[in-house]
Length: 165
Image (tube, rainbow, N blue to C red; front, side):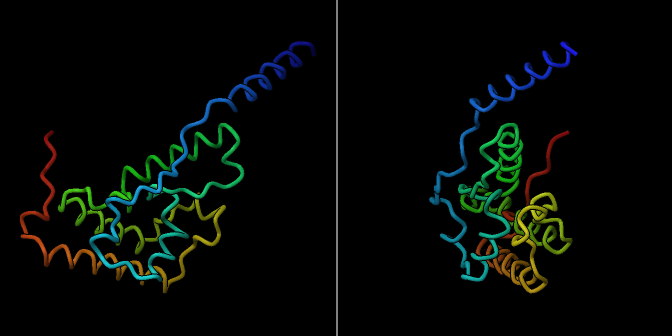
């Protein structure tokens, strides 16, 4: 029984110590390269992005209360980093034109197939579940951004270079 008590104390100490090691918050609100600076974003689309996308795909995350508890904060931080790596609406204009074009295509596919927002996110954030009308509005917006890119730039600038093997 004494060994279980010692193990419990060690686990408790580790959990307490973990609380002092926190990743930096994603709250810079840096908007210098925001997609809205180059492409029209209606209020409806802004609302959809705010409720279902921006926590992981922007420079500003609204953290829930449980983000103050480790190791949950680490887990959330990994999701945010991964989301921003794939697409960051606040850094969109810093992407090469071919990447912008490709990211809008990927966004359309993810929304159409119901892959985004992630199920693990909507499990807790019920308001992030998109209605069919919201999905269509987001899809149409992505299409209009792609069409705008296609009309503005030559076709060869819309193709990402092939990765070397």
